[in-house]
Length: 302
Image (cartoon, rainbow, N blue to C red; front, side, top):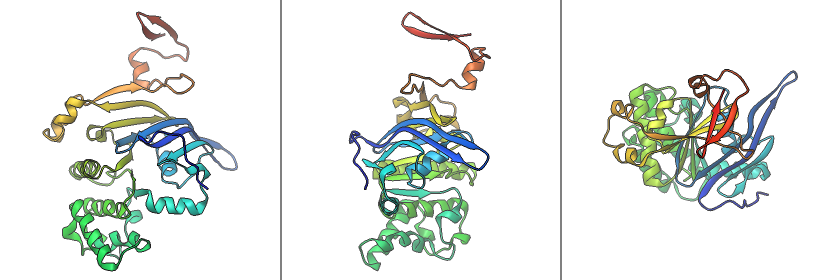
């Protein structure tokens, strides 16, 4: 059975020393290397990293699709590592909603938009009329109710993603997980989808975690978590003054404004990961560096 964590009520997600090793006959690949992370209730977060950084593995674990090799992961107070498969199925039905990059993973092509949104509700209480009304409300919330009777092949990529988001919200999840949700659309549609996630976060208070390699998403989320080599390397926190101007600025102007404060993340062993860009700027090309304290500041030099 799942176990209650000793985390605070403010955190909906806590990752404690997550390790994930994929094994084949000839090789072992460590996707996560002792990753620690906390995400508060109602946060809008982007997890950004290059291909192979471990971000998709992290998303799958939050979604209950994979278990860690070591470490613990708690979502809404429940220890996913300790859950039986039947509990994980229930967890995926009620606690998390998924939006994938490929519309084929999100929607049934032989169902209309409204029927797709109704589909996850068949295992919930309520009659047909109530399910239809809720589905229409969700399509209206995501701005795609005018396509309620259209089939996925009759819709654009951006329209399909709006329906997919409505489907993900059908069972009232506490966490919405999006895997590269703007990866298959143009920049204009990408901005529309980003704005929709912000709207849902503000109006519903739902926690949204977006996994992507698209750095432009940083301009629209409150917190950016950078993953590198299976660990959190840096975090960017949106500045209050920028947040106030967010709705007033165009996409072009947003890119010209300094939006976030960047912090390097120190793990439990007091290790800090430095990016290639920082090392290059400092002229450090060796694995040995000098570390000293001057005027209360830690100085790293070659």
